[in-house]
Image 1 (cartoon, rainbow, N blue to C red):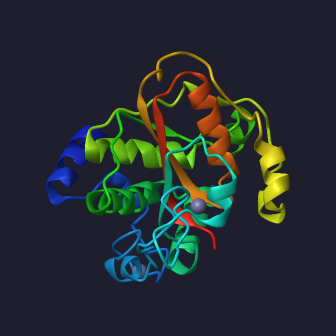
Image 2: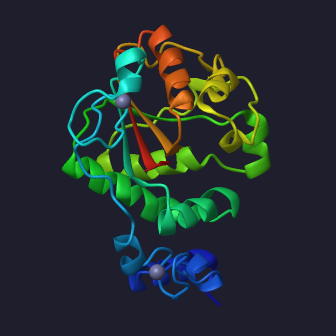
Image 3: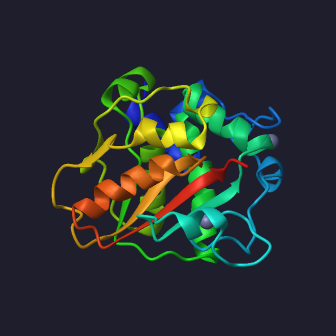
Length: 239
Ligand SMILES: [Zn+2]
Ligand SMILES: [Zn+2]
């Protein structure tokens, strides 16, 4: 009889894993067997094309600051989102976040990798938007941290997950709140608890950008600890 390590070794040579045998990959978009997100469904994701607001990344007819960014100072140099939060990407993110499909981290992170190849952002370190410990315990994982780890593997940039922390448990039904309420909901929710990120160029990673309130609150906490610059990259932009 083979032990598990020998079996995995054999399967590695075949390009598969023990988990693939127990849970064969099935596309969350079209339900076809073989991959967690097939090439056809991936191709249907509505990528955001320039021009956009250089600050918040909002799609624009010309590359200029949007009305909101003109009036509101930002703690973040630039926020970018790969695609619109709709269709197959929305479904995939739902499976990833709420249905324990952690294996979707790799195909979703590959969208971030492809994006950065086309629209480079320079950074020294990747920081995922943290979850409150209570939420982390409920879900069992931080989806943004999984994305950050996959991105780190692809780019070779380090990830620091435990410097920026979430200290306030915010309301879970944030989708129902307007922009002002969201800002109040997350203000002071984050703290950077040590100096490891001081002088660094940080790339914040999150799954969905909605009003930017969460990212701004993270940016503020990072800047207060002497972080040199903060950029943010998310998978999806709600419109
Ligand atoms: Zn598919
Ligand atoms: Zn803007």
